[in-house]
Image (cartoon, rainbow, N blue to C red):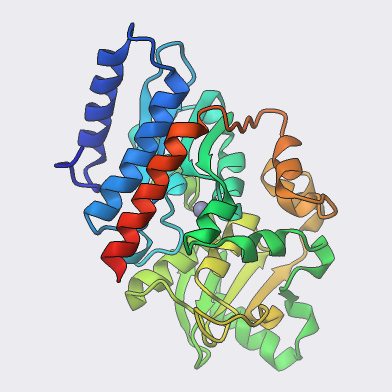
Length: 332
Ligand SMILES: [Zn+2]
């Protein structure tokens, strides 16, 4: 894999699929094989200097699986706070197989999913997830998603966003004009609309292209940065979708700066209509719906079709730690 570009997912898939087929009959455990290759992708990514040490592979759930999509973390080079490995693998697969039913697929990830990726995965119906490192390992290596998991533990009515109806009427009028007829918008510090987003899941063949995510991607693409801290705001038509809300958190919306330890400003994300009833009946909203659960393992395991295991962790874990070390060497 050393010579492959992390952007050439067709070549990566051909390479891994060929290796998998060559390994058949050699007693190699399928789950271990794909998990190790997800880690190899993480390592390739840091060696190529094209992003963080995270890789993911989405396969069919067959006796001899077919690779549907692969992804690595491309947040920095693509100026896209949502370009995490798992989301990139899902988008890659959906682009390649627009009509595929993802309910019978397996995602292999070098690291436990963050809430943004997890809600996107649950929303797309992916059946099982295998991961190597835990969020604690990632935290230790300088890639923490503890803030997002802490947000998820809020009761739904205590999440840090604000209803438009709570604002003065003059501001309501201004914000509605900024949103126009779009599903979501990112508002610049001067009050102008920097980018808008609409539900484009069908048009783009991208299960993650919900309105709020699209508005964030469009704003970051326009500004050529993945950081929308310091007074950018997200305005959504409906109460924020968990994936979109977590995407806005990865974009640092509501924080004074990317490195700030401050709590998120509820006035940085404003929604127009209260669709909570609709939201709690939707599969994609699991994390918001179970606010009192004590820990993420329980949140995940309550999904009857999500299977998380450490079975293949042993070797894969040490390989990932090596990828993190490479990343640190390159970074400093
Ligand atoms: Zn993620």
